[in-house]
Amino acid sequence: MKKLILTTALVALTAGAAFAESHSVVRLGTEGAYPPYNFLNDKGEVDGFERVLGDELCARAELTCEWVTNDWDSIIPNLVSGNYDVIIAGMSITEERDQVIDFSDPYTQPDPSAFVAMSDGVDLAGGVIAAQSGTIQAAYVAASGATLLEFATPEESVAAVKNGEADAVLADKAYLLPIADEDAELSIVGEDVLIGGGVGLGLRESDGELKAKFDAAIQSMKADGSLNKLIEEWLPGSALF
Image 1: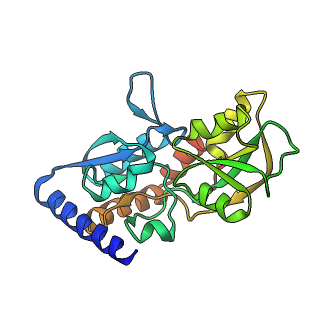
Image 2 (image 1 turned 60 degrees about the vertical axis):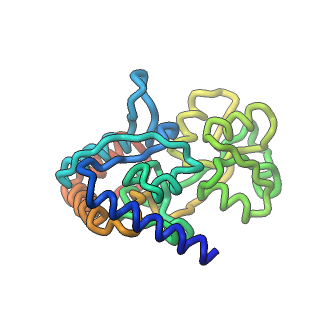
């Protein structure tokens, strides 16, 4: 494991140096499949809370930015290898991830996760719980004693409940609540779960200057209240700064 982390760090150092030397455009990598944080609109463009936030952060940091989409399960490796420069994809700050990449200051508070199921009587403690792979929710289920059923996309994890593969799905409440509201067969069940340390930008460890620019932009949005306005608009019910 130490060898793996060392190798990853060396790759990140090389990628960061290449960015500093030859790039005038900062590439923002997102999943594009996790509304309301990020999704593709009818024009095929990145949209959602993080699109608006990312564009504003780049403007305040006086950076020219472009958007790149990437599957969730390879989003960290492709940052490290230099395919883009920043992850902005609803990624919770965790100690495990922080061993491989760096994080900006959080731009959301720790947000509750929730269970969605087709009935109130499901066994959340010992049943089969679906979650997107590589998420804080998957790690929580794996450690809880329930049976974890992992999927590459959040849509697949919800579909597993609908088709009877899983008893419930655990994901960010901001993602699941609109789904439960629109589907009469699904509902929020059990208690909310607080996990993770808020959501932040993921950056290579070697890109300290870029991190400082984004941290300053995030703090300026917190100071003037504009970040809270975005949270209220896109993530209603979430904790404010």
